[in-house]
Length: 122
Image (cartoon, rainbow, N blue to C red; front, side, top):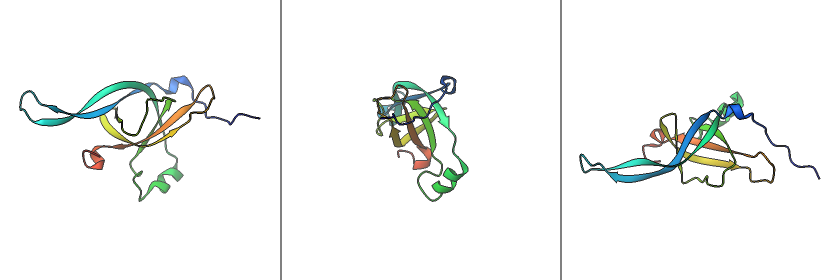
């Protein structure tokens, strides 16, 4: 029986780093006001997947219009409750396409939406 063909990415493509964590409410020591703040749990090297023109057209009128896709090596710690800090912006995970097969090199595709575009707290 043949193993399913998987996508292969060169290691040099994963040159960018994204932080994964949660948003917690912390008290500002100067004002005493409760503010939500990103708290990092771990970091992963990522590859920003470019969208094809067809993918752009299909996303019109959906939640995925301004979404971005990041590719990471398969990681069991990923879940849709985490937030992602990438290039100084905070993102919510909309979808995880996870490859948990027995293949040697597997990848997860994360579809992210900017928290600011979701109205602040997503």
